[in-house]
Length: 389
Image 1 (cartoon, rainbow, N blue to C red):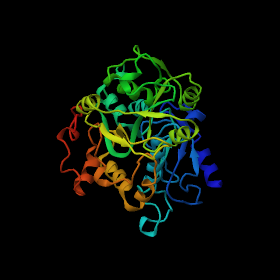
Image 2: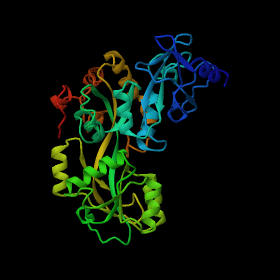
Image 3: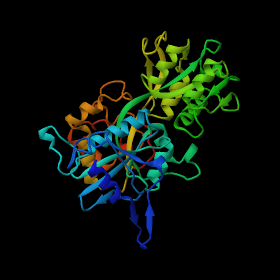
C-alpha cells in the first residue's frame, strides 16, 4: 500500500508547458488499473489498484519508476466492453520488477501498466480517443464504424479517418425482449408500441435505433423511452413498456436475471432486414440465442457484433505490434477466454472477424506473421470505409 500511495502522490498533478499546474480528473473518470502482475511491492496485482491520472495526449510516464501508463477506454463497470478493457489492461501490463512471462509472470509490454478508464460506453470512448484523452478504446463494431464514417451520433464532428483496429475481442448479441402482455410476433410488430431503446446517447440506443430502421421503423413510429436496463426491466415487469432492446453479452447476466424473475419472450431478428443489414454493414453477423441460455426461451435468431480494441493511426507501429502480441500470448489468452462478452473461447483466427475499421499496420504485422490475414479484405488494410462480408 505504501507504493500505491506514493505513486498516487507522485502523479496527483502535472505541469503544463506554460508552467501552470493541471489537477487530476474527477472521481468519475478515475482509472481502474488491471495490471497483470505484481511489481516492487505487489500493489499492482491484477484488478487491485485504481490510479487517477491527468488526461494527456500521450502515454503517462513517471521517469523515477520507469513506468508508462496506457489507458484503455472501457465503459460502465459490469458491461462487456468494460470487462474486456480491464482484461486488456491486465494483458498488456508488465511493470518493472515483475516476474517474466517465462517465469509465469507478466507477458505484457515491458515497463507498461494498462489502465481501464471508466466511461458511459463506446460513444464516449471514441470521443475521448479522438480528443487524445486516452491512448486506446474498446467499442462496439457498429459504433466504431459510425465514428470512422462520421455518421449518426458522430455526424456533427465528422469522420475520424485516423481510427484503427488492433483486434476484435468477443461477441455481443441483440435481444428484443417483450413481456407476456405483448402481442408482437416480430420486430416490425413493435409499430405503435412502447419500446425502450436504452439510456439517451448510449451504445444501446444507437444500435437499437439501427435495428428498428432496418425493420422499417423509426422513433416516430414507436413510443420510445430511454431508460437504463434496471429501470427498463422494472417498467417491463410493471407493464409500463411493451418491449426493450438490449445489446449485451451473448449470455447476458442482466437478461438471465430478468428471465428468472418474470415470463418474457425474445422476438426473432431474421429474414430480409438482416440480409440488408449484413449487406450494408459487413461486420454484422447472423446469430442464434440458443435454447437454455435464458429461462424458457427457445432458439431465437438474432444479429451479433464484435467488440473492437481501437487506437489512433499515430500510435507507433512497433508499440501496436507489442500490444497485439501481448493480448494474444498464450498466458494472456487464459484470462481473456474467461470474459463473458466472448460467449466462447477467443481464437486468434477470429481476431480480424467482424472488425469495422482498418487495422493498424503494427497489428497487421503480427497477424500476417501468424497467417490469419490470408482472406482479409483489402479495405481493412487501407483507408476506405469498411464494407466486408
